[in-house]
Length: 172
Image (spheres, rainbow, N blue to C red):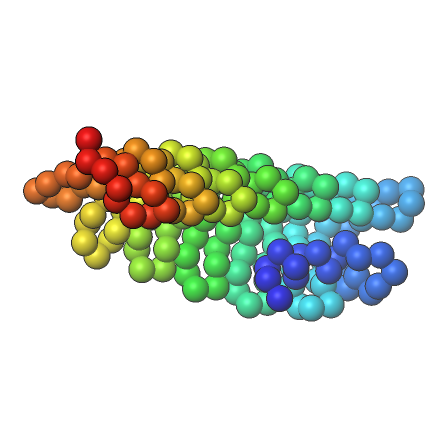
């Protein structure tokens, strides 16, 4: 089960939603500040609106992952930081549970991508730095791959050209 699917458990109607301590509205829905422990062992501490996570909050997954950021209508939306169980970290913008907009992803091996995201993939302008080799790509990304104009830079030399689906195609 993905981390996103685990979060959705709290939203299902007609099922046990776990333990909850906090504000409620006139329909007895979670509303305002509250703390919840879900049936799957995950925990949420933050704001609710009409039964859904909405506003700032911290969601802790039982697998060690953690999201600290904004929610809208029960989904990660706005500025937030996600700490993955493997040690990698994404800090940036979210739209409906997807990395979308400007963000920085630090991979467990030390590689770093800073730039634009769309639907959880590197997409648009961005810079990827390979920690081990100090090699850096700055340019256009499409659906997670180098695609379009870019520069591959190392200490002593630079390749300037075009990329297609992650492969060099032509020099400038």
